[in-house]
Length: 208
Image 1 (cartoon, helix red, strand yellow):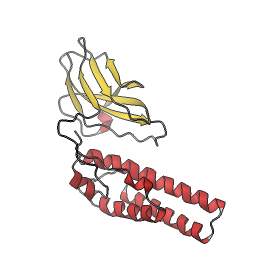
Image 2 (cartoon, rainbow, N blue to C red):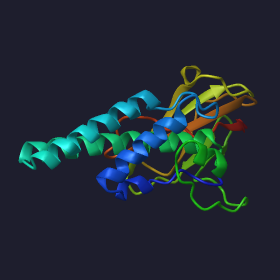
Image 3 (cartoon, rainbow, N blue to C red):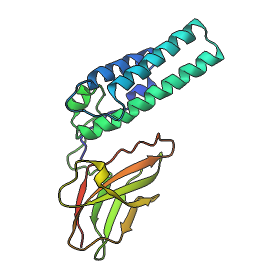
Image 4 (cartoon, helix red, strand yellow):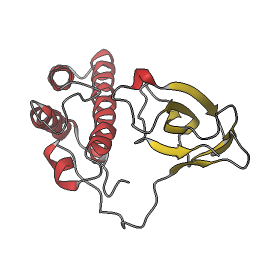
């Protein structure tokens, strides 16, 4: 369960402040043991920030249409990368605001420990079934679920297999074996996403 999440506060920054944030996040993620494999590596964040800085200087020197377009593209690219890593930092930190800060992001206000996450997996209504639930966000068009049979969650996502894809917030899936323990993970698919999956922590269910 997440207690805090990395905010997208950088989307409202001016170009100059966004450039500063890009370099700051890159420095915080470099050799940070809490975040060893971010979706966008620190070196790539640095490169995207360099590109934005160059585009900004070019636009300042000659505020033409082409320069403005290049500046907008560079700004959007850096923001998309920072969003991707913000989600990674949120999940990898398990919601720890101190760890989120160490990754270069601003943590949200801590949530109550009794607050449930917006996803769940539990035994189904009949043998061999499981109920899956994910409260989609405003920009999510669907949810993908993966499954892994076993009480211990695997160390890599490649060991999971697809079990459901739905545009609904809840679905009951059949085809499991009664008595099996199964780990489930879910990821929303954003309408304007970049194709990156942001998986939930594993949810362990005993199949009825």
